[in-house]
Image 1 (tube, one colour):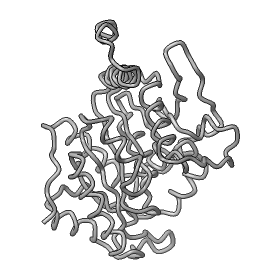
Image 2 (spheres, helix red, strand yellow):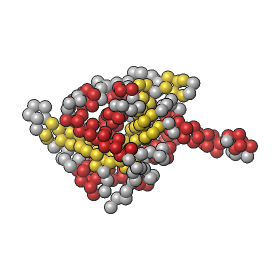
Image 3 (cartoon, helix red, strand yellow):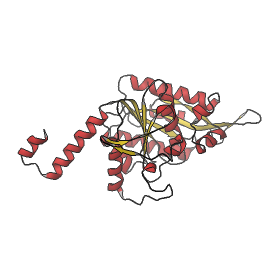
Image 4 (cartoon, one colour):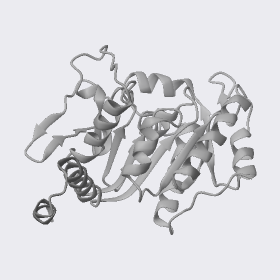
Length: 290
């Protein structure tokens, strides 16, 4: 096909763009299910949800995770692979391997130092993101989880364009009103780019006291479920806050493996099972906001 285009004297920049598209399509054709984890704002535990989703799905499946937050990559830290560098091979970059064999690709592993700031404008960030998808030796995957940065700007838009066949997005929120306002923006963004919504996750939904065992509603409770009801979207579940989640993340140990008997881990396994079920069901569709 490239030879035919050259014979027709297609301009070089158009030729390069078409070849890039073909390479991306060939690489992503080996991935059965593509899941985007997004949030309207930062600080809602989106990366923790993305990492633990990937690890949960990896029980009996092959999984990869892309850290699409180019300027603030945290996935390698939580996965415990932050000191493992990405190596180049004959067929592209070799992702590092984390818990349960999850393949990890992140900007954090190509920087000279973890304190190095990535001071890039949009085009450079988009180029790096495309390379993480297109130039990585993912091989055959059952699931590819993409952890997006907060908001609805360059990176989310690029992912939506590069993965038009994505199964859908998992939208993470906390129960308080200010977070729910941004959820609606995320849903509107997904509609605009024709990205289906797999469902909403309410994170930090109450905290189980380690002393008395009672649940304290730190950020209210039920806001995410109510938003899902109002928007006509699936509600994937509530995840209680557990201080050990923070400790596990700092130690590079996903909490579904580190504290498997906790209420948070049990709730998360239920969320992961529902995401898996929806991926394997007929393709979801983004629904309009009422």
